[in-house]
Amino acid sequence: MSLLDEVYASNPSDKILYTTLELLHSAFDYQSPAGVIRLCSGFDDLTATLEAGAPFDPSAAVVFTASGLAIRAPNKGIKGRQEMTITLDAVSGEVIEQLEQVIAAPREPIKAILRYFVSSDLSEPQNIPYQMTVINPSVSPEQVTARAVFTDVLNKSYPAINYTLQSHPGLA
Image 1 (cartoon, one colour):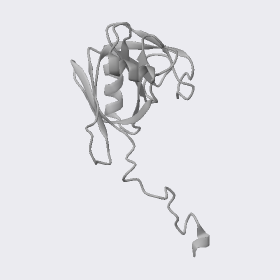
Image 2 (image 1 turned 180 degrees about the horizontal axis):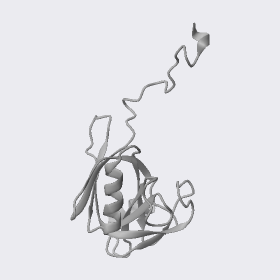
Image 3 (image 1 turned 45 degrees about the vertical axis):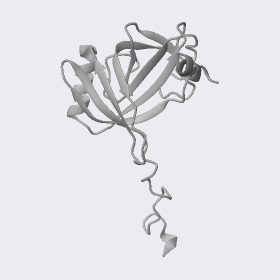
Image 4 (image 1 turned 180 degrees about the vertical axis):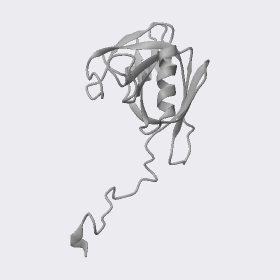
């Protein structure tokens, strides 16, 4: 049984589950490294070590800023596209400003990575990080809301390569 399964099953009083969210976009530039906003649920900032395959700072200890982070998991069903609802309350003005700039010029999607850490072992995430694309973000002075979608595997074309005469002239 993994540490995350143990926390879910028994809810031990000496272990705290931390939900973290990493937002990635080339326009984010207010903190280091540029392109990343790291948030965690709770009242205190969290220092934890990322996995080796992380897009920024792999295997490094990073700081997740405390915020009112709420995640609503997708409903179970037969839909090909799974959506998760993200709500951020009481985020700093810098985060809101960064998100407003990205929303105003939506040429590049915002990527999101959801990780879970347990207080007794912050050396790595306790789950395989969920990578999503943020759609329809909405920013108000009180909160930020957005939906995040996982890869739509059911509606993905197979094979992923389209064989056309332009790309493969030998088909003619």
